[in-house]
Image (tube, rainbow, N blue to C red):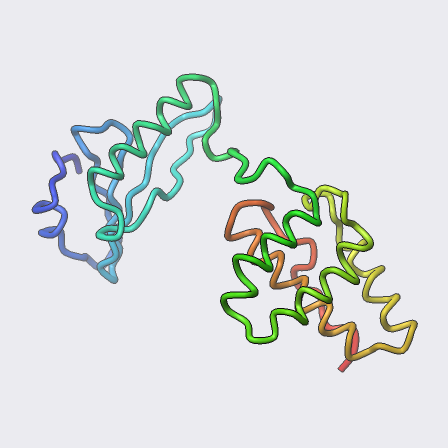
Length: 192
């Protein structure tokens, strides 16, 4: 369905048993998706190369219609310039050391009473080993090496803490689109 979206028309849209989309007539490519739960989300549709893409822009009312249109036009401008906006890098420095320090500053300090322990684990186990490597190049066997070394020196409980801290780091990196996926998905704790 196509409509000239306004705040009034968006608020009037009611949820149905199946999700549906309303395309904005004033901003080509901008789509409002209404889910059965009543959630209203802005998406942008565009073609980059041969691929049709439709990433999430934001959720209404946290993102206003004007902001969604502005952001959609910005994304379409980038596509016209030959840039894929979904592949944009969030940070120019993707070294393990820089990302870990940003994680501690923005996430661990604000949400964890024992953030110093997380910082110490990352510093001693992860940064010391991989500090100058790109975090996107860390593989599953790299993390397993760290965990195996901890178990070999008799620190079995610490090996579990190392895995939990690295898992939190990678989940945070995925949220921020620093990495596409975690190398430790499904990895079980080394000890009980």
